[in-house]
Each structure stands twice: as C-alpha cells, then as structure tokens.
Amino acid sequence: MIQEDILVRYGAVTKELEKGETLFQEGEIPVFYYQVLTGEVRLVNYNDKGKAMIQGIFNAGEGFAAPAIIGNYAACSGAEATQPTTLICLEKQRFRQMLSENSAISLMLLEYLSKRLQFKTMVAKEINCNEAELRILNLLRFLKEESGQEGEYEVGLTRQTIGDIIGLRVETAIRAIKNLEAKKYLKVKNRKLYL
Image (cartoon, rainbow, N blue to C red; front, side):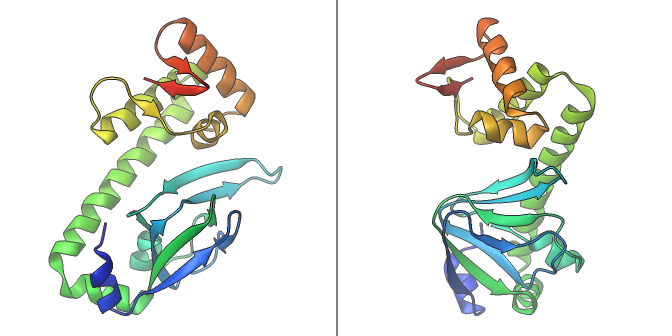
C-alpha cells in the first residue's frame, strides 16, 4: 500500500505483536494508521456468545484503521494478530498531514477503500440473500477475481475463516464445501480448497 519509506519520513514507528495479541478493541478511537510489514492481522467483532465475524484480514503491505482516522470515529471492530506480526504505525495527525500533502497517496487510498467497500457490500448481500453454498461460492469467486490469478486458484482461508467472514457456523461451512466439491464447483486437495 503506502511505501514504508514515506511512512517513516512522516514519523512512523514499528510495533511487534504476538499471535493472539489484541491491538485495539471495538469502540476504541484509533490513534494510529497501521500497515502490516510481516504477519497477519484480522479485524473482528464478537457477539455475546463469542462467535466471531471477520471484517477483514490484512497481510504484508496492507493497511487498516484509515476509515476511522479519516472519519474521526471509533473502531467498528477489534484488531488482533493471527500470527507473530510486525506493523508500521503512523500517528493520526501525521497520517492526515501525509494525505493532505500527497494527492497520489490519497487517491491510492481511496481506490483501496473503494475495493474494501465493494467487498463488504458483497459479503452483506451474501449474508442476507443466499444459502450457505452460494455464499461460499460467491466469496471464493470474488477472492479469485480480486487476486487476478488465472486457472486454478488456491483459497488461502480455513473453513472456520470462510464461515466467520460470511456468517456461517464452521460445521455449516464444512458441509457446504463438501456439497460444492461433490457438485464439482471446487476441489479439495490435501485439505486445501481450489476454485
């Protein structure tokens, strides 16, 4: 996303997270823009029974917390590391200054946020309108299209994560995936999914 040297020029610092460590909670006001250098962070909400709803998964080069900083509102979900992770963090006011002084970065960020909004709209539609198999199939098709990969696409998500993204219990996701495999919509090789 944003070049690391530009973030450093505006005063960014690095932060290390252990697997399972929480960066911020839902409802907190983010004071930093975060970008993943190594590892993975997921934005997630939990219901009163502890069921997760994944709002986003961020890997190396991807950033998060920009909407809350730009809109000046509390985080809509918590952020937690799914593996040991290194982040580069830019304080809120410096982030806003960087955007105001760099129209190319602002435009790139708008394009990125538009893609995220498109994904969230697709997920909301799937949750509200479709049965489990179609939800999964449409999610995987969207991810393949976004990857730009031709031919067979390896899905880099667990069945639990797929369920958490589109609002299904893991057992329902597993059954639906088996049905999709039987119908030849996807393949399972060595427990990995391919579209």
